[in-house]
Image (cartoon, rainbow, N blue to C red; front, side, top):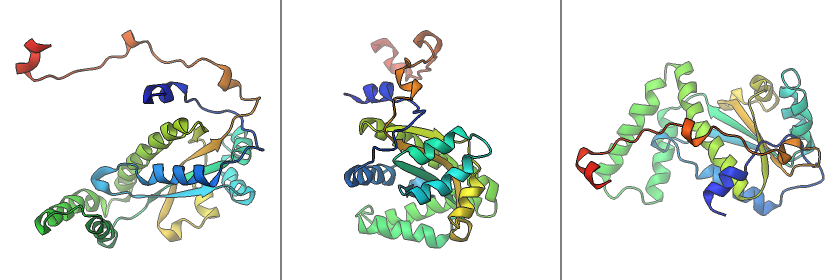
Length: 227
């Protein structure tokens, strides 16, 4: 299949088969997809918790009990839960860590280029240093790039998935002591294989008609006569 086929075949799984697990190879592929997700100025302001054990999934499931109890079952029955965590602080030490890795990976042909990258990243990331709410908005935007990336990636791996916002993030923060690690839960994704009770697997995909979805194209005037 091509990438459009994977986008079309992906759907939100409503029930999982608890007997079906993911292989170590599949989990490694999932880690790689998350790791290679793009982010603004390559900031990578995230941390991912991958839970496969019953104990870890039970901790995460507590966050759904009050808001969406049905998701408790899905969290416990799925093969893998991914918790998307954002960094609550981005400082010079973290930015230098990124820069050092980029240097090792050969990203800087000259010292001038390295300094330019340092300045650009500091301008973006440190602009929110004393504005925690604005920092969270910015870092969550990066997390949602990772969310979209993994949903398409899981479809390509033929693994079912469900993004879940109907949780109480602070419960997961407490269960995994995230605050003391400078992290905060944003959203989770369950992954695995659907069960026969998954009604959504049998339903056709529904999206707005092409005629109702407007795309705006901005074209250089000098090319207009060629189109």
